[in-house]
Image 1 (cartoon, one colour):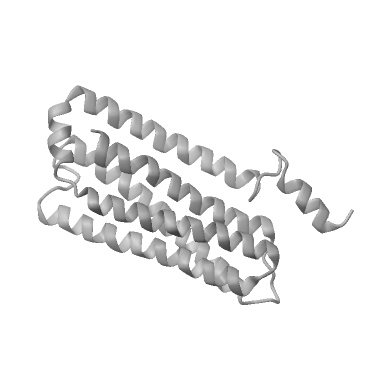
Image 2 (cartoon, rainbow, N blue to C red; image 1 turned 30 degrees about the horizontal axis):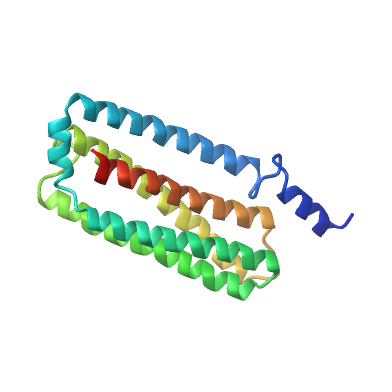
Length: 196
């Protein structure tokens, strides 16, 4: 059986998910961590609904919507990049990866503007319980986006070097990590900005 055929079979097996078991173990641990934190956030909001509602009104949901668009768009181009990589079209995979990274950078830039605005108005980690959760949850997510951008930068540089080819599993793992960042934001955004 050829290597290509083996990779094709493995990519459809539960025991060989895209990117490998290690990255999926990491994703599950991260989702569990964020899940526990979000449950704690929601329990706290039930204990003091008026304060949480008043604090939520101090957020700018437009920032959240725009950042959701940035991440969803970058997620689309990440999936497209992985697809082109598997087809062997590395120049196009690299272009799509560049757009993916741009989405991540735009997300971080807008988040920096939002953070600056909050700090200017004294809405820091110690302002109240809502903002303690806001800062801890969103900054933890920002760290994941930063790590994701480092991983994507590594892949971007490696794509230009044909002497050291990237394994499909490694490229997929980068995509899985990036999609995890998207998924976490898609959970954080409505819970923090809209539902309290």
